[in-house]
Image: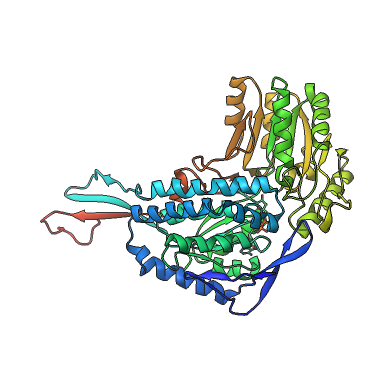
Length: 493
Ligand code: NAD
């Protein structure tokens, strides 16, 4: 079993307390690697390295074009290591190899896109209203960034957060999830190979309430960019206020996927299934509330059950597996608990509804893909994020009814609309409070397109040109070119 170490100041270093955690393979249910259980001192060491790199190292004087060259080199190196990195991710989080390989293959696009932006960070000359003044703004890196990530797509989150942060000129300390840290630790080596100066990119691992919390408290961290649950996000948001940190949060969702009776039913059924069963439902954008127009609800539900029942559970490394294990034991238990809640609330189970056990499913972390119908918007199964392959079907009458139910949630991450009527698509997509709305498609993402949540789903945007703003501060500079001395020094000019 391989033992990994923190990556600080350009090298792998043992945790100060000499403590490691087991990293579990969720498919086999056994430990397969060891990762450092970092403490406050490890966090401090990493933040000091990042601060030095920001203030003194060659990074501090590099211009955007020079940073871009390193980022492009890193993208090339990731491309040469796709299989190795994707396999590490599958070992850790049990998601399908096809999905993780797709994510790692796409990962370099973020580095290249933000490399393209690194030398286009421009201020403005303001045609100022005060006489004999020259006034301009410049955009400066916010400082040391702590990037705290979730277990479902570790390297994708590194790309989303760090490509924008490094393009802006910041330095970073990444704290991946204790359930899936290995790929991020392995990726760190590539930043050294690409030639990033020591201390620009650091990775520390361990438990959220220990080393994660220490990063949030650290006075030299200027910004937290976080992906995870809304409960942790809220804790971090209030904790970060004590040191007045900037905070971006990518949190959970209970996304409505709305099927109108005028849609292409085959496409909608496939979109509904992929919206909830892909990644074993462990995705923040899961279309976990399926709103189906009452006129087609019965017919459409039958199709879904047929499609859902055809999903093959098994080894996530096998190309013909459709549903892998749940990544963590607590998450597995949480999904089963929600199945009990759904039953108690009177939702009608028409597929699955329990654990999946058979000889070819080792590890004890599989659940059946599950569909509940006759769900009402008040039920907990319709309101709370399950983060598993559990779909709630809710019927609706018309457009207004669909919009009302769709927006009846604390979340606002994503939504889907299935209709052939483009007028309806535009009306409904503009009425829904969500950061992303897909029409006749679902789960599409791109480095070019801003992504993030409204309401409890988060603060800020990742990807797209907007993302770089999250890592910049605007400075206003005023220069007087007047020869006159102010007549009255006690009055503001
Ligand atoms: P989580 O909130 O349990 O953990 C996320 C990270 O926060 C981990 O690295 C963890 O160690 C750290 N953490 C925990 N407590 C902390 C503390 N007190 N201080 C600092 N750090 C702490 O989330 P998870 O279970 O890893 O991920 C699942 C959640 O993430 C779901 O709610 C999902 O919707 C959300 N998610 C959101 C997005 C998005 O982009 N919006 C993407 C993927 C997942």
